[in-house]
Image (tube, rainbow, N blue to C red; front, side):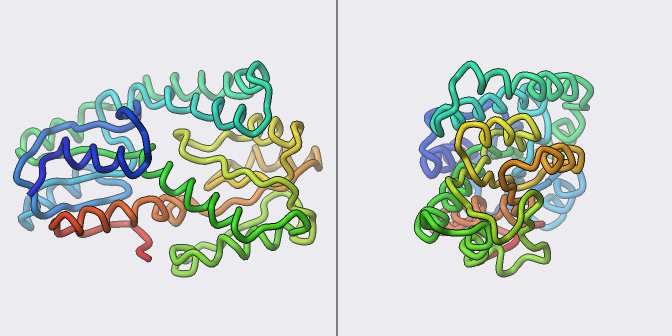
Length: 272
């Protein structure tokens, strides 16, 4: 049996993060947790389902309320450190992040951050979400897979093939897509741009390309961003798929919960 704080601490240890990021939170604390319902998206319907079927806690992946929704935009700044680590000057990284960071703050201000949390409190159901820590686990797994398989003379097709070996991508309905570039293009230096709240869009991908990255891997991207990147004709953009890629980081966490004696039922997760 564990409590909600111990569950969050486990996610931090797996991801090597030192503190709970702004997009993750414990909404309703709980103790003596044995049976967990975990959903990539878990709100009021899942809380009611958990109550009806004797679960001790509900864990969502995506932010579901409170400060994790209102302050979600803050984790988007993680893109800056990722870009700097891959050779982008800090001033250019900050500029690339600035527009979408502002958009995310405006969008968060419109969200109903109370609804699901109030229902959880009414039901007496322990409730939390864990976003960036599990995305960071997934980012590292995907990066390590690429680094072990993709060589200096590899193509974009080779990047897709390497990622496709991971169990989640084998089991997914969606397929990995090359949204910008061609399969036979040289992959060049590959960066997995993930675990920073949401995708970096046009500005961040373009900035990577301008500083020597040949292939950027996003887990999702908007059609408008793809159109602008295609128009410039520089670099390759591989998009792995949202739910499947989230699952790459979630499954190791679920296994750790199970090793600690918990029963975990997942909703919307592509299991490995």
